[in-house]
Amino acid sequence: DIQMTQSPSSLSASVGDRVTITCRASQGISNFLVWYQQKPGKAPNLLIYAASILQSGVPSRFSGSGSGTDFTLTISSLQPEDVATYYCQKYNTAPLTFGGGTKVEIK
Amino acid sequence: QVQLVESGGGVVQPGRSLRLSCAASGFTFSDYGMNWVRQTPGKGLEWVAVISYDGSKRNYADSVKGRFTISRDNSKNTLSLQMNSLKPEDTAVYYCAKDRVGGGVAGREMDFWGQGTLVTVSS
Image 1: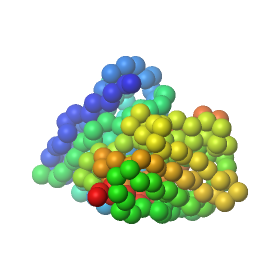
Image 2: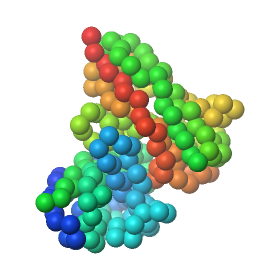
Image 3: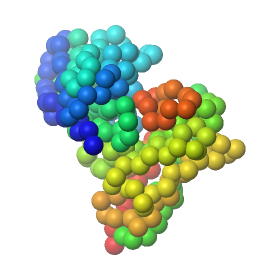
Image 4: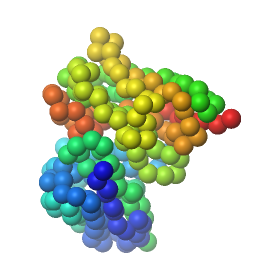
């Protein structure tokens, strides 16, 4: 099965900072990658699908890129409401494996 | 608006069974694949199972294959997860989640999630 590895596992940044999270697949998955945001005590929320397409209603400070095995989620200007854990997930074939998550905090 | 409401969680002894349900509303349930995803308290997400819009295709995580069965009743807008031979490591919050795109390919990005139901497997 394909493994999904996220880095870093956690980060702390200041409001207004540019934040980058990476996700690496153990084999190529084309662009079948999604990013979710999960705030404490809540269900995950879809941010980006097909590696780079912003879900309706998601702020434009979020962006995604990549194809094949290496993917990136970028928050261009970190806001207090972005404090959450971010997960990537591949969906080219089952199993639909998640990455281990990246916890984002405000410095 | 889309609503997914899970029920059926609780405390169960190892080796016993439990059935989870997810009541769907606010969209044409029979058009979309549906998933179960679980999250161990304080840990990450684990995809469990997916079923196609018409119930003809199902896939499972290796960790639950042969023990869990996903099913759906399109006449009642309900998704189910039958969990047998439960193990302590099945303890988690279980979410049902809808595929963003309808049609024949099930197991896609998930655009709506329920609030989750907690399953605790303990003697």
